[in-house]
Length: 133
Image (cartoon, rainbow, N blue to C red):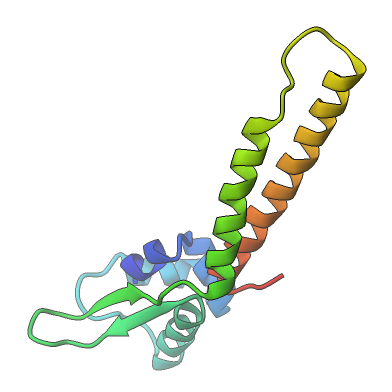
């Protein structure tokens, strides 16, 4: 369960919220080795929450059970490309030099682009966690 959480960058609290299971139950289950010691209903809720976030559970195949992450959704990949493009745009905005109206406008432009980039990063994080905005 901890490996599945790590794939989607969830804290135990995030999993508890998404699965509607108490944090103490999550921590207790992660503290055990081997089979999870929880009710089948709690196991199903946790599995459903993790699968909704993009985790794929790999069944026992002689090497042991495991988890992997689904391929990124096109929306996440597109957001990542846009975020990287904004990095280049931010780097190209000249804000150095003596104070002037032009430098002031450039600082404002840079701040606006950085704000847009932050909003995109937040949206991408929400998509990865299975909570689209």
